[in-house]
Image (tube, rainbow over all chains, first blue to last red; front, side, top):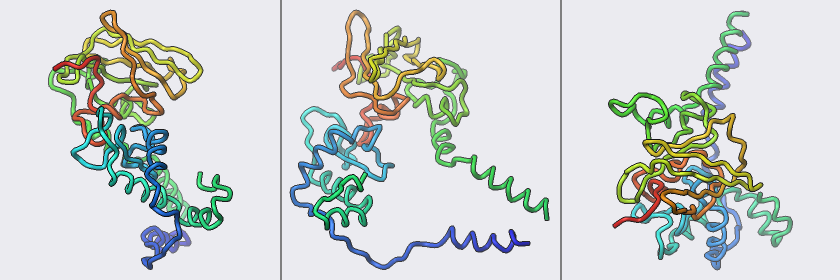
Length: 115
Length: 161
């Protein structure tokens, strides 16, 4: 009987949505992020690691996952588009926004918290 | 009441084993090609370890596997090529492609650790893969056809106009 009584409650928890209220975080500015984006893309963005759309931290760039459906990875002479840097920025600051804001507010103290 | 609890436990156990993402990936590969039976010549160019991985349903389980083609413009299999895999400890494993370009190592004979550097020897020439393999056990996880924003297309040995 206790189990039966618990079941509807469990279903309600499973279906509950997080609060819809807007929240804002003070994260590092987009300005000057292109250089960071290029390093992240080159070091972490291979197609079998963070160069996958399924990853929470998903990275785009010229030799890896592309943002535009018309672009191809690894094409000689390709360039990382501005939109790809924008997407990388959104991915980085959106992964753990609370932690990112905390580290940013403390001027980069203990950045290992972002790992 | 005891049987009710047992049913709940069994239900949790069954639901815990079912992986809908994996099932969808297996299903998305489609049926066997007409006239080709299951075996080492089937499904060239597909991601081997989707089925031949820990979650099945293929058997045996592979540590690594893939398919090589002669050129980027067509899907002629690269037959009899040596695929040289070197891991971070400089341990080497050499595999040979079969009649359809497939190569693989079963899990119990694959002891390399990622990342892997890959080179292919064929016809007296050698070609290195430009980037290491960090974790994909199937070539086609990154080298699926057709090429697209998330795939570079099938693995090929040489450019041909």
